[in-house]
Length: 463
Figure 1 (cartoon, rainbow, N blue to C red):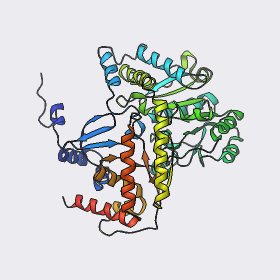
Figure 2 (figure 1 turned 90 degrees about the horizontal axis):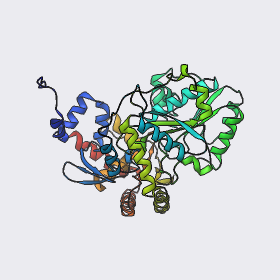
Figure 3 (figure 1 turned 30 degrees about the horizontal axis):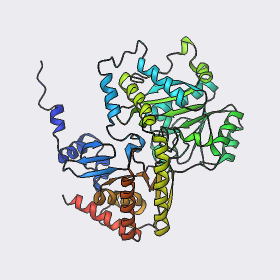
């Protein structure tokens, strides 16, 4: 056996790395600017153990995870059913792409059974962005058109195609030119959608049933149903991006079911892998699939090396089974209502809390944004943090004082997402509400909150 080079870290050595080692390696070999940003409000904690809603750091401090992997942890951390599923397939071949996959075929069957309407044909990849990429390509080849409509504030991924239909200029601008023919409209604006569809040249309209990164925005009543009807009137595919909202997150298996909407294509990922295995998928009708890839010469036009591998598909099978076994759809609806009602009461007490909105356990709390305030203590990123990112300041205090993990939404930094695992207990919800109550009661205005954030960051710079 060849000797391992001395400059290579073994797995055992990696497992023994401390927090300072992690920070140093991240700073040197990963995204150094992101490492600095996370460190400003002490978000660079080294977590060493996790189970369900709980995680622990290296000093055995316990935290509540109310971020939930941006919607990837519907079942919580390290759910035993998922770990057991992986154990059951550990002797099976994981990747033999010159054959068919038993677990993938079973998973496709189950997804056809639980998705609305006549959705039947699946394509498996590794992420939400990859699911969106596949859906966009499917729309182009099926309709013979190349244009897409998407919504301002939307988030569909950061690969080139998905980014082209993601509704925030900050993420798009530096990578332009993106895909041509992509037009953004306001979420909920049927008139704008109709005006573009009337040209009869749109391949697909892609939309989140509830905008996640846009700040947890619910659609107007009947919006999705009317948007789908308009799309069908003009031969355009309706793509529902349920990467974050799917699999019981909103108190239904899929958020589009709230309006009895059957999309032409439905995208999934995140929690599909049970919080352990990366897997993404889109599912469409047999008719659409046959138009796109229904012949031998088209069968390999769109593929994925790791898509539908045995371990990922087994995790997804166990995820679907667990959602039903643990009655998570009904639990999520009940707990979400309880949580929202408690947060609305806080909104009535504190002007700093501008809005509370959501469905099920996908909840956003928006903070009032004050006039620009400048702090000279730390230049650059912290000035921006203090003036624009109220949500991050509250998230910082929730983490550092109360041991509660949250984060702001990417497209609306003044909104904190509350997206705990669906296995969360009522006592966990009460703890978060009590913490927010204390924070809002103590910090009557933005200046007090921002000063706390500056003090935390200054401590970092003094290390």
